Image (cartoon, rainbow, N blue to C red):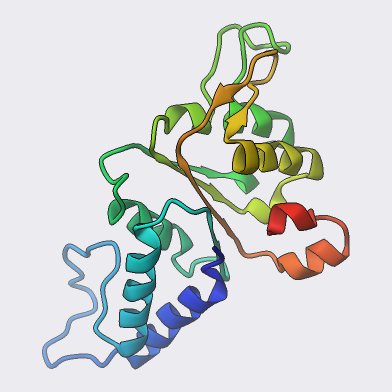
Length: 195
């Protein structure tokens, strides 16, 4: 299910509709819950999160940087039956491409130079039944997209340096600020991965 720019646009609309109450002091922020708002657009975001939280389907959240995509992902997890399970986030844009597979799928000891011990990737760390949040999924290379597609379709993955597949029973939430439709046309984002 693609939550897409609709949720992010609703968050923006809600922010524009906010009216300062008398005595509001912008410097005195205090404790803020993950997502707040009474504006109609924000209420629509909350309803969308409520509907999607009850399912186990994969969700893609799109929108510009800084619009709260990870907050929406965390809210989806916290309001789901998986709430007591791990939520493991990974920003793919912050990881060197050579290390991304290891961070996603883990690796076995000796899998590559410098792999002096085994490492659990995000899919192992959120199992069983937790959620992974893969931020900036539009930055992922085609070979890694193919491996992620195996996780989505077959619910299994192979750690780097292993010959054995591991089961994955968690939920995948992805996010991007990239124009995936354009990336698909440019053959930089796989069509089957998009759908």
